[in-house]
Amino acid sequence: MIYSDLVAVTGPASRRDRTVFLALTVTSTVLQAASVMTLIPVLHALLGDRPAQAWPWAGLLVAELVLAWAADIVATRAGLRLGFAVIDTMERAGLGAIRRLDPAELHGRRASKLRDLLSGSISESISVVVLLGSPLIHALLLTPLLALMLLAVSWKLTLVALAGGLAMFAALGASRRAIARSEEAFADGNRELDDRILEFAWAQPTLRGAGVGTGTLDRVVAASRTRGLKLLAWQIPGETLFSVVLQLVLLAFGVTTGVLYLNDDISGVTAAAMIVVLLRIVESIGSLSLLSTPSASAARVLGEVSELVEEGEAGSAGPQPQPQPVTGSPQPQTVCLREVGFSYPDGTRALTGVDVSLPAGQITVVVGGSGSGKSTLLDVLSGLREPQTGTVLYDNAPVSASRRLAETSVVFQTTQLRPGTLRANIGSLDDEELTALADRAQLTELLDDLPASWDSRVGEAGNALSGGERQRVGLARALAKPAGLLLVDEATSALDAITERAVVTALEQVRGERTTVIVTHRPALVALADQVIVLDEGRVADSGSLQDLLDRGGVFADLWTRWRESEGWQVGTR
Image 1 (tube, rainbow, N blue to C red):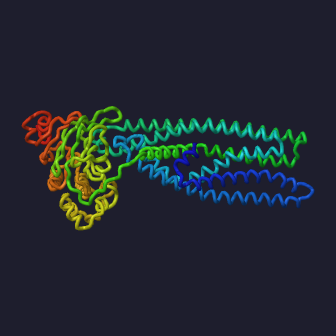
Image 2 (image 1 turned 120 degrees about the horizontal axis):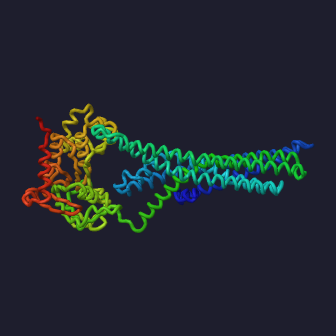
């Protein structure tokens, strides 16, 4: 139900606003229904022998309308406050859901729903209570109120009004349920289309280079068009059904009024007033028809936000560990994984019994074939995932995922920059700190070439910089964070030799200052290692110094040979 979801979303703090909004909107509806019925004595007086007797009734009519107008104004203000409360909850619960989102779902259906909720529905939520709630309450209550008030005229008219109102409500309900199902499928199709278009745009260089067509995108566009046609197909019969029922109700009410007039059960003036009553009934039910689709959308949005609120409350139930403060200059710590295991929801076993030690201040290189568990290991170390079995320890003390996340900095395979300046992408550092950082991250030459140094703009997604330049900025951003653990995930896999050498030099300089873990297949980075860990099918297949592993042969020696050969590979000439 919309109201129950609204209660869950706005919470106890908005109880007064909900009560004021509901009570005054109902009061306004009662007053509007009473004003319609007041027209009967007004018309009787005006069309009778003594028109002056219409003044008291006209005064009552004006008073009813003024009071209804005042009630609507106060209710609107309360409704707007409820709308802002919905926005506050959407932002809070949405951001909380994003923080809880599994990295594997970042491009999945749930992430798309969260994106749509936070980007497309927030602006609409300010007015959803006023522009949808008030008309819905008016439309739902006005017909039964008028029907009950018609008892003062004729019970037969009351019976026809109630039966007609129920029939139109039933027709609307049937069409609304069909439209709601189709709208959900349509929304899912649009989210999928957005994701595919984003992927298609992102992969343009690769697709063009490989000569790959747009077949996948074409299929998604065709599916989205089909869902749109289905939505339209469900709307048409719903509107047709309501139109037929409406015509039947009009006919029944008109015939009943005519029969009562011909039998002298009501006067001609009363029969004329029934036209106004009937028009108000048709107006209220008709507004429901217009509100059917937007109310279904609002109900879906409030339902999704209510689910997020419930998830957040469930996640925070019970005693919560207090977050551990992060010092300004954390020292490198020995990080240990003890029998760590992790499986994905589809059953894929990523890590099994991983038991390793990462000495404080040393560089550990993790290698392995595709699917060996390297990325999952970094996710566990960074706090993005909590191991399902085993423990992560800092200096022999168990540490939570939240603390690992706070005390870890990461250099990703591809660095994403937000629009703005280099300074804004690094963080709040003074000029002296930025100068030292530029030297450590091998950015000095780049800054000299830029027109405004740190205040130069990087463009949309950092497109004003080359890939190698973005990676060095990403390294600088990681080094700017006061964190004792530095993770580097294939940061040089797509870089030229000169840029890779700059990154290697920068990583050499942090040796002893941070506990560093590098996932790579590049020999230049492997050569930095104090120890190398070899993963194979989620298990530690071997570990030791570079020379020890080469001497022992096995998985690593085979990988090393292939890497060295690929580095020397070139197109031959004949």
